Length: 308
Image: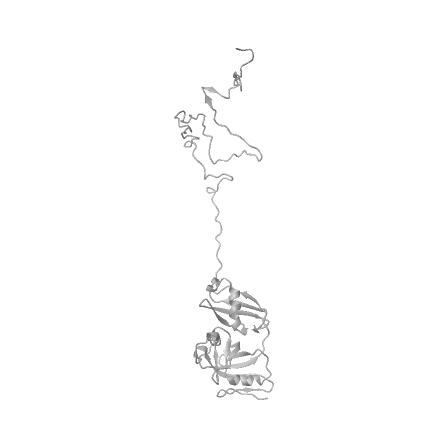
């Protein structure tokens, strides 16, 4: 077995098939050629062609997954590889990954080929309440994670949706602190975003004794009985004649009529007719006990036989 450190872009590997070396890292924006947004949106890096040549000769597990370590601060994360087109001695990382590792342009980073367990559960925490504006966050996250190969607890990922960048912190991963998310059935949960506050519900204020209304009494339709008169308007005849169009004077109206005041003596299933007025005709009371219905005389339209 033999091993060593990085010198001029060279690396060492042992006879058991492990891959462990050191490169100088740069952000994707430093990659020659056109802008590579596909790298910036995901969790995969670009490595030199010599790395692929060595990896194919080793007994490694696929897909290729790597652990990145800041040699100065010992901060770690995990990633996959997208292409092997970088200059020798260099690797190119997404900006969010360099920020997690506290790396500057051209800093040394250790890289090691490893195998990770398949993810079964991951919990994310949005870093801003703006994430709540997304109508279907799980679908957006699922689409964004297609560009990732693995997840590490403590990482803050950056995903893009509708031309906006959203940051998500990986709070928990199962069954380990770093998991592979390639071809897996993973349950996802969200913690409340940073800065989110539950809406406060105002408790109902207790009414004072004066404000409490009498049960069953609706005062919204109450009208002063001294101002309200029943059927006090005038009428018109259908034949156009002006005769007896004035409403008859209403007598016997008492102050007991109050709109909106319920009958507290009401019993369910009983109908009560309240008559507070008496109709007066020719000065005689129609409710007089001397009144007899159909007491008048009648005449026949047909002449009786025997009469001339």
